[in-house]
Length: 292
Image (cartoon, rainbow, N blue to C red; front, side, top):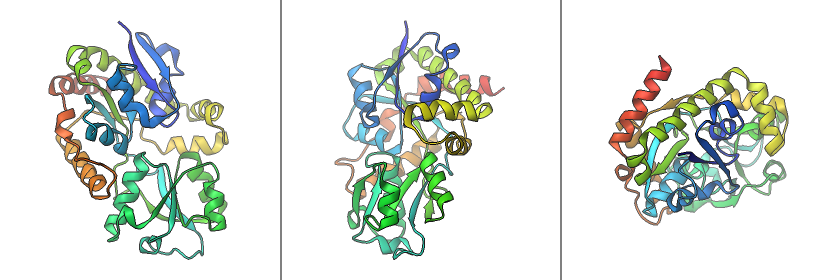
């Protein structure tokens, strides 16, 4: 039986895996554009395995969708940041009060921005979220927005331009992990199939780490940008996987609290409900074996 993985361009690990035919034995690829639908597609049985950020996985749990954690990426401290205009009116996080900030609403960026604001004594409700677009860097440069959460090649190019300053990176704020998900029933009945995907993801990560230019070319073909900027951005990723641990659960529980307090989650997410110990044992053994 083939396991169906969901692939969108916002998840680098699954995206790269989907282009490496030699790692896709027993794996079918289902491509879709809206990263926010990952939990829904898993629950509906359209896909069996997918990737989301901290926000997307918690939104699915708050909606009581039957999802389970399969594995997580290592923290990604250099992939995203909150930028402001250099020499502009915003010098500190508190200066963002009542101002528009561009971000990909519903992605890890929502969790990151909510945590940055909370740490400064503000609320997510104190700013005006502006859905991100390809024009975001120009909006910030021209004063249309006062802040911009950038990631990947866009962050690399923005910082190279000299027009922007980094108000906060993710390091020390959130872990910014990819969270890999499956259906609870699938985790319980087909744990070896899930472990097969985890193994393939780990090998895809190793390939990307060793071939950043080729990985960048794949990405440029899908989303545009320059090969050089994408290669720089992809080198900032750890390209390693970790099993679900108690430390991750505690970290994710804290994220759920941040998003609930920010008013982004309508209900508290029961993080422990997505833990399947029998799957975790198999995945942990798989990752330990591959690492060795």
